Image 1 (spheres, rainbow, N blue to C red):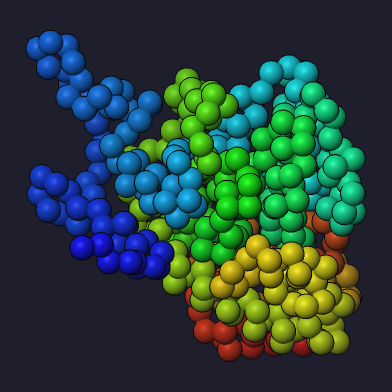
Image 2: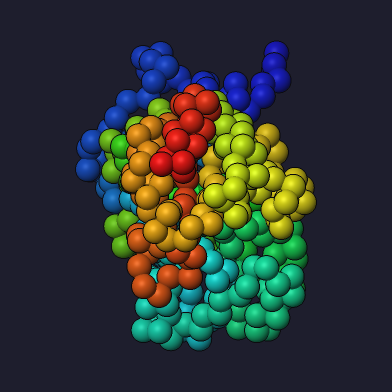
Length: 380
Ligand SMILES: *Cc1c(COP(=O)(O)O)cnc(C)c1O
């Protein structure tokens, strides 16, 4: 008899993974770098030959993520950047990439450098202009439309369905960096994306103790096989201990993301009329320009990420960050502990981030404690 299970049930039980040999409900870690062959020189398990190609520890978290995203297959990488880089390395010289003007800065910087050296064309488009994406397309040349939603650190929302239609119109792949939304809030493949990318360092793992990345495809086509080859040949696979920690972290993903989203909305609402703050950037607020699209493509919440723009400018922003004692002053996001940062200081000169912006990653602590900590730090 098949019993219907909701995604939160499935994820908590890692889709009912059991070790068929021992009955263990937790998977084993396989540190082995190589895999034996029998006397006929056949591999014992066909898919495992050498651990840079595929590692048995990856199977459980890769299956969990593929199912969560509703994709055909997932691949784990040594970092979010390694995952993203493997996608762009599947292109050929002369191909054209379109990406949002504001996006994860590390990838933005890498793209600018890499495309110049490797003969790829790159256009950044303004997310706030509804026609900018379709105007950036070059028929016959654009091969990747890369989007990030909500996008870091303004939390602008990009309409995935619309981007997918534009990608189809020029035969490009739509890749979505869904690190912030997670499959709990948005499943980009359902809106027509070809590949979903995650920095698994963030919400998927959720405990600030591994660096990891992931890609999930809607279907295993030639482009995907090229990406797999890039992971194998470029050596970008995740380590087995990290893969094991990731499957453990993902079991509580639903709980963590819902809690962080609920608290982030409370924090955003509390500070939206505060006299020292001239703008709260959070897609869950009806005042946010992306709110209606967010309502369409996000369910159960709007993520734990928000930014505050401080009326007193850079100096006041830094003072607030300094005065916090519950929020931890650190970069990164998506962990159980709340983090605060002055984003411009991290990105440095040349960054498009306003100097009055404080970026906040809400964890799972008490909402009242977090609000009090910020409120007190702003008054100081
Ligand atoms: C952190 C991050 C990345 C890069 O991932 P790493 O795991 O640090 O390599 C990419 N995109 C977003 C949105 C991120 O937050």
